[in-house]
Structures are given as structure tokens and as C-alpha cells.
Image 1 (tube, rainbow, N blue to C red):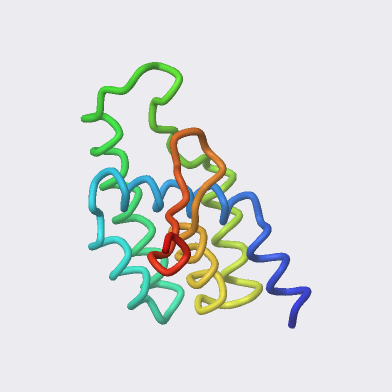
Image 2 (image 1 turned 135 degrees about the vertical axis):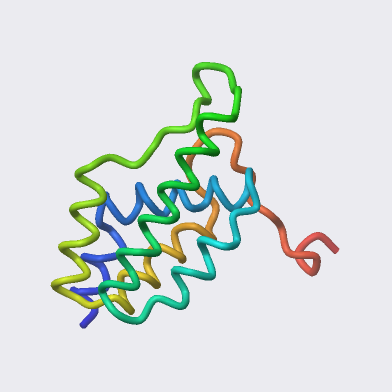
Length: 122
């Protein structure tokens, strides 16, 4: 099981789409996509939630004006195909958890500051 988890959590497609979800949450408050992904139980539900997220992200990315070095990068076709293959191999639950986990952690991209828990600041 741990080999499966590391394969899924370390997958470039999961990181790519999870990172896009992170940007959508932090920059656009796209909690609808997060909730739809969390509620996806079947493969078809997951595919529909990803489709809706990508559509929202595309609209958001087109509307945001950032310096060229910080433009929002859309997930690749390879990432999309990769996560769907992972769903076929490992199931919705594991892939969904990996995507959401990547969305909720600090990314390695420039400009994403880590938050320090209140107790650690005291």
C-alpha cells in the first residue's frame, strides 16, 4: 500500500493539478471545486469534478493580469491523462486525497509563504 501511496502522491500530474487547485483556492477562493472533488466517489463523479475545476480555472486564469513571470500556468494534457490513469489503477479515493493534499500544503513556487502556527510564534 505505501508504494501505491508514494506513486500517487509523487506523480507529476497530481502535483500539477494539485498545484493549480492550490492557486485557485488561494487566489480565487474556488472552494466549489474543492467541495466537488471531496464529494466525488465514483470515477464519473471525479471526472466531472475535474472538468468543472478546469473550466473554472481557465476562466480565472484568463481574467487575472500578473507579470509575465507569474502568469497562471494551466495543467497539461499529460497531467490530466495521468491522473485519470491513476484513478483507474488506484481508485478515486486515493487520487482525490492526493490532489486535495497537494492543494492544501505550501507549494515550492515563488510567492507561496508558509504559515506559522500561532503556538509556534509565541
